[in-house]
Amino acid sequence: MILVLTTAMAPAAEAPWLQNYFDANGGCGSHRLAFNRLTTISIDVRRGAEKGRDPDVFGKAASEWSDQDIADAVDLYIKCEAQIDARSRRCAPGGSNCPTGPDQATMNLARGYERDLRDIVLGVRERLGVQQRQEAARQAQEAALAIRKQKMAEDAARLRQQELADQTARDRAAAAEAARRAEIEELRIAEAVKQGGRGSHGTRSGGAPAGRDQKQN
Image (tube, rainbow, N blue to C red; front, side, top):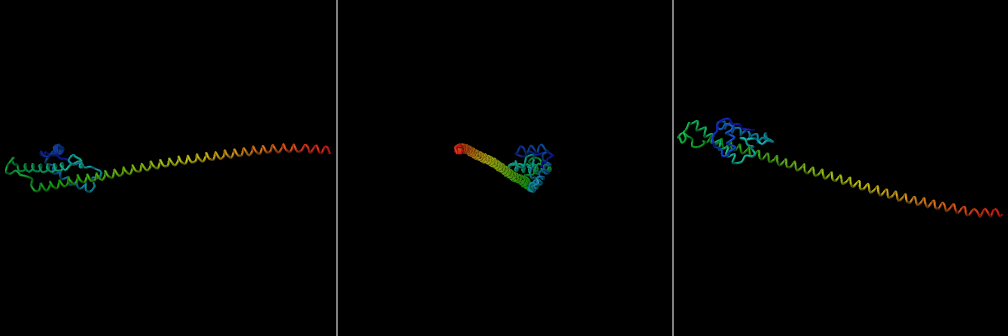
């Protein structure tokens, strides 16, 4: 929320940015409206209506205000009131009818605006601090989740590699067993063929003499 001023201004504020803002927007006269709107901003901040925002107060983000900025703003208000009072009295510098200082009503209002400014600045800082902590926590959770996902992916990849290695080992073992059995079968067949050859030769040798005996008889 930006506070807009529209009239002429008294010299005063120690902070150049604050003085420059008021000068650029008119100055004293409408300063009361500008300061009165601080109460609305303060209420909005307390209620959370400014959630997610850093309200603009007199041309500067509330979170960037310092204690000196607050003191300068209050001092500017008092000096503007003094200038308006002097004009209304038409007093000459040093005249007897010139006010010697701010009256009690002005001081009460100034203290109220000081409270509003502090409520705004501290409220926004606290809220932004909470948001920053929440954002940091969210980022940390996302980072932890990313790490977990990466670890799960790496574990799954290692598991697949191990499964492939185990299957390769099983395939090699099965191939070796098949080769061993084939070799045994070849040896068995070769031995059977060899034994069969020996049996045929023995039958022919034993049959001839029997035939000769029969012929002689």
